[in-house]
Every structure is written in structure tokens, then in C-alpha cells.
Image 1 (cartoon, helix red, strand yellow):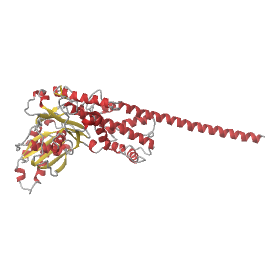
Image 2: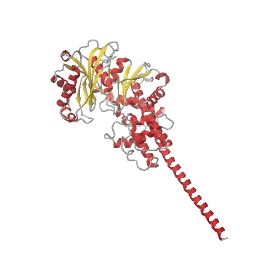
Image 3: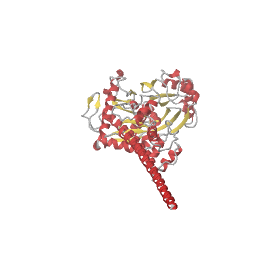
Image 4: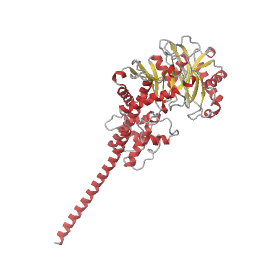
Length: 509
């Protein structure tokens, strides 16, 4: 009888233990489901904050057009700088001869030789890239420009048979100088300040082309700066060379900017400028565009606050390659705080800009069943191994939300330009007056930058938004043209167009 009680007691103990284990398992599952719901809730909240309905995009379009008008009407009247470039003549395809370009935009510079054969013919350009020695970035203007001129001289000497005739012949140079400059003519400008690690104080306030020309003269080069431009203007020039219907250029890469052709009657009041030309290229500096209609989230606010330039370049921080990867990082970091979907140790995920936009694009465009590229990047870059498939899918979704918002906002910016000049089918704003009398014309926008040219999903989302905003009928008249190396070849073309040797220049109409 006592033995029976023992059996019953053991059975009860086993049953109780099993129930306890089951309760623990169920509890863990319930807790896990709650955590997952919190993670999904973070995504849903972020997706809602990034919403870009057609109605909202059209509000951004209107705001862009209004800010463009305000920036032209008065200096400082808008966050858009709307800088006059004095480029009132663009290449038309008839240019002939050999022209050079110098592209100084950071810690490297490039020298190009471009041979133009007329009939919109460009032979394959010769290009050399040179790093700027670190000590010259904080030395004197004479040291820096002498180094550049010496490199240019070596490059020029390789032309032809190596004789001195190549040095004696007068050459025209297009100079891409991607630093803040107050343009005073198509070929001259005053340096406002250095950026990108340069700190050569004796150049600030001086005329940039003069500094270069003096250095070239010291090195025995018979060369003249015919055009001083930034990379966006060069992109417009290259686009116009290939297609005369090109009226705007946009760069969407690590950074972003836009320029376009504006009629003179819309800008003659700006800075008292008077010109007999029918139009001029305006450098918008649109990265600084801002509107309350932009879908800004808490992650954008945090990124801006942590940046070296808070409350500046707001549009750029939402659409350019410098920042998209870090927005994704911030969102998945928040998810990991809500629920330990990546485990406890996340030192890499907490590092700003550790997830670069090209890697984000690779994850977004991973079409393998198991998302193997996503797993590899999370492991190799963020040191997060063994991520479950459902979490990998979540990461891809975050990439999609960030990219879609960026591309659609970029599309709205482009349509804003078209609206300003009456090329969106609605009439637009020109000189403060409606231009409903303007019929929809074939309109080409040259686009350069890896975010657009190399990121398929970004490009598809941008095109989709253009059609939604413009409508299918108007969108048929707008062509987005891939353009490559406007900062180099485009600058050389502008050098040719504004060459003192040309007599067939045709001003913009």
C-alpha cells in the first residue's frame, strides 16, 4: 500500500513538473510575441512617418517652386541659395578642338583632356587622378595651386610628340571647384570658405581662377580658365551637349544638388543683374531646401542633431547617399532596444555611419530566398551573426521605406523645378506670374550620381513618383537622362563654349 502512494506521488510530481515546464515555454512564447509586436510597431510607426502620398508630394512640389521664386527675388529670401552662375551659353555640339578640365572637389583632384570633333562627338577623354598631399591642405594657396599646376603641366606634356609646342599653344580650361564660391562671372569667383578638411586661410576672399592662372604661369603653362563651375552645372552642360532639350540637372549621390535654366526676366532684379542673354543657369543648392510638408521622423531629427551641421541641409539629409544608410541603422537600433532581436551586445550597430548606403542598397535588392546577402552584411559589417530570416525580412523592409521616401521626395524636387519654369503641364511660376500659356514641351533632366544610376530600386521609385505627380500625359514629355562625369567632361565642354577662341557661341533663348 505504501508503495502505491509512492507511485502516485511520483506521477503527481512529474505532472506538476511538466505543467511548470509547459507554463515556462508558453510564457516565453507569449513574451516573445509581445516583443515582436513591439518591433513591428516600431516599423509601422516609422512607415507612417515616412508616408509620401501624392497629395503630400504635390505640396512639396509647390513649396519647392515658391522657395525658388523667393530665393531669386532677394538674396537670403529662401533657404535655397539660388546662386547665379553667369553661364548663359551652353555647348550645342558644334565644339571642336582639345580642351582641358580640372576637377578639384576633395582630397583628390582630376585632370582631363577632352577632344571634341563637332557633331556632338567626344573622343574617349584622357583622365588622371592625383591625391592632394595632406600637408598642402593646410599650407598656403601658392603651395597648393603650384602643386596642381605642376601635375597639370606633366599631363599636358604627354600630348602629341612630346615637344614644347603643347605648352606654347593657348589652351582653355574648365575648372570644377566644389567649394563655396561667390561667382562674379562665368570664369571667376571669390572663395567664401574651404570645406572637406582644407584650411588654407590666405585663399579665402581671393579670386579662385586668378590663383590657378598665376600658378600655371609660374609653371610655364599657357592656359586660361574659361569656365569656373560646380559639378551640377557641368552635368547640365554635358546633358545639353547630347540633347538640346536639357533644361535642368540633378546630382543624387553622396550629396545632392540641382541647377536649371532660368529666363532672364525672372532674375534681373536679383543683385541688380542685367544681361542681354535670354537665360542663365541657376545653381539652386537644393540640399538646403526645407518645408513643413517634408515627412520628417524622430530618426531624422536625431540624425540632424548629431550631425556637424544641425538645422542645415535638411533636404539632403533625407534623400542623399551620405545619410540613408544611417537612417536605416537608427531604426533597427531602436528595434533592438525594444526587443533583443539581435542579442545583447551591439557595439557596431551603435556606431554612426557604420552602415553605408551602398550596403543598405545591397540588402534592399537581395532577392535570394534566404536573404543571404542581408545575413552576410549584418555579420560582416555589424558583427551580428545568425539573424533569423524573419528579422532579415524586417531589415529589408526598413531599407525599402527609407529608399522609397528618398526617391519620391527627389522626384517631387524635380517636378518643383519643372513647375517653376512652366514645364510640368500646369503653367508654373515664372517671374511671380502664372504661365498657363506655355504648352508642355519635351523636357530633359540630366541626372548624375550613384544613388540614381546604380541603385535600381531608388530609380524605379523615383520614376514611379514622377508619373504619379505629373500624370501620365505630362510625364510622357519629361525624360530623365543618365549622365556620367559632368564634373569632368562637362567642365571641359563649358571651357570650350566660353573659349575666347570661339566665334560661334549661341546664347540661351
